[in-house]
Image (cartoon, one colour):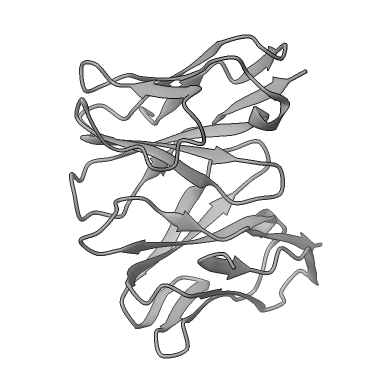
Length: 112
Length: 115
């Protein structure tokens, strides 16, 4: 079993829909939780991060972390065709390895 | 903008050939990471440098993989005697943090195809 599990989709939604993306993890030492967006043939781009538990909002994006359930989510409101990309969750421990551990990525298509 | 750059962007190698992939991190960034991204997968950690010191190479899949960052800036990932399973996108990332940070900025990657 991988440390971080993410449903690869694909996920296809109409423009304006609310999108919910999520990951589960097994390593309770993870303290940093990130969401990256990766367009085709590009490198991942950091969208949002959360330290430990809680919610964080940035415009149309909301990130949630539930450490008791080892479950993180990214919500996209009023989705746009430009949001079409692969969304990767990533996690990191504090004080241990400096590496990021990624999920498989979920491919999202927002249809106009 | 002065982001992370990688070269070449695409590389085709015959099985058994050696390849060298270059990464130019963001100027002044202390930390540099290499990741391997297979088709349809998330990036997998290969190795990490803090300045010129290679502090973690636990993700390198075999002794055919070698990375260096001799002057603490540009890094090269070398793969000897390439195999078909080495076909992947190789991503470089840099960070202004030494230890304890989490923000990593990724380059566009080098797509390696081994035929």
